[in-house]
Length: 150
Image (cartoon, rainbow, N blue to C red):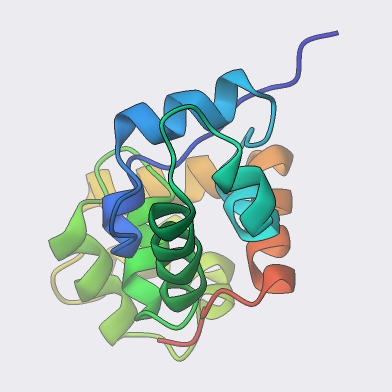
């Protein structure tokens, strides 16, 4: 049975130094990462066991992943890879809410009334969050300790 892969648009969105496309591909191919929340379950030994990974580089990546949990919530929102939600849109949305939960609780019509939020952004956000897989992903990120307070 295939598991649905819903990786972040890029780990760079969460400012995870050293976690580029090659490393992500290795993690996916080894079955260690299927979605964004899986990054936060990785063990140092799993990272260190990857091809071409030194102990020092593995520690740097592990530390960068850990540090990313405390980044601004807009980075998590941007990192989810929601269509039409780039860095600027994520920052604008987070200015209007205390938490990502508050943001996701808003309906499309109410989102469109906010300054700087277009209909396209509001529609993308509500459509994306309407998928139960995506809602579960957000819950798993929160449970892992990723900052969701704007």
